Image (cartoon, rainbow, N blue to C red; front, top):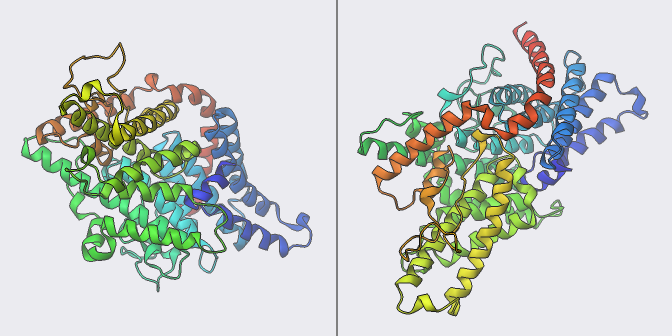
Length: 510
């Protein structure tokens, strides 16, 4: 079950789903007494999570049918006053349907489903486990924030169809005195949750939910910094970057971090997430290890480490250890690449850092006298072999996953090492892995890993080239293998989704 597997990693609230379902059944001695619209609400959430499992298992037709079954269930309960204990499941169903649409690259329907989910979250006062659902939304929102480079100008405007949940002003809930449901009503969160990490700052919230929200904030903060760096490089060389966000330095997240830098700066908040994860692991409620959250923490720690120019390849021992541990986790749990949030992008950037590590070790070896005639000698030789094995295994896994994604959602296309009889160059000065051949991700946060060490002029040119390439490929659906496979199957089901949105729009506007 993909839904339950992922709950072990990013806490979508699926463990807590059983609580509302069981409480509801306990209040009804006979299941036949449950109204049909309440039964439909409970079934909608289950079908939605099963559709994600089918998609992760490469069963596209089944995934579409299950997703459509969830939509039909929601249509059956949309105009009836469902029981309050079912409201959580309805909100979760809309969230999972949105995640399913985001996997298909359907940005418009993703933001519509997310908007409807948030409108239900705003009504979840007094319902347990709301913070788990909000933390899950925040985590997946960090992915949307990253791939759109924190720019809301390129997001489809759905306000005319589905107005945002209102009644809560324009601020951001940041303290333990505010309820998790308040977050849904703030105007700054209408497209993605941003600003101060409210769940993380709530000491009464469960540790795992606080950890997840902290990591989401760290991702957003790093994206803001990457946007500023790219735009500054473009200004230095007189380039006008497409899709530039002139307000990158003034985002709600950037303002929150600046106001509370000691607690919310990326490095410190990742350390807090690590502590909260360890705290959760020591509790009786920790059923299984949260591999996905652990992978996020290790990745972010490696990314934020300053490195060591005097050490092997310019990386500290802790960095190398964390990078290899991430590889071990993803190779043992490859389904994490299908998990909501930016996990897939984290692993891709870990692979890029392994390329830099291999290039540094290779350059040091080539510069040493007589090193070219020694094969794998000494400690550095053992480490090189281990890093090489990890890189090749993860690269193969990422390439297989990348082919299953829509073009616009793909992270880096990582080049292969310059080895073997068919390598492109025999020059001993050539890099072990030529990162100049990388097909870069559209996210500027991800591009920074590839462009490490490049001059501002080269970095700006490559970033601009990548932006234009993604804009061109995103419009050319004929090159998208994913769309060819699912497009015809999903056309009829898209009509059912649109019918659901039309009903919701009519209810909201009336």
